[in-house]
Length: 65
Image (cartoon, rainbow, N blue to C red):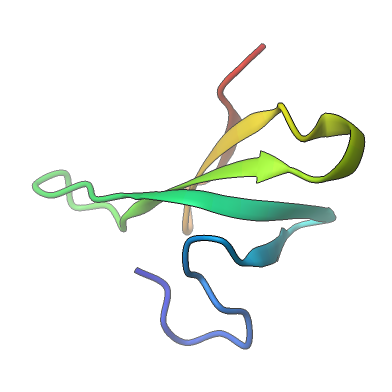
């Protein structure tokens, strides 16, 4: 879980990832793979239906293509 940032990485909060502003809708624990926990995010405004998966230090991937 992200804990050393000025943004609040909690469900329901809006965060910036690169140039995107996204809302956190779910925290996805990833035990055993050695990676940080993943965050499921959705876009704001027109692209509210777009969903993303963000893993710190590994990047952002769009879930619905």
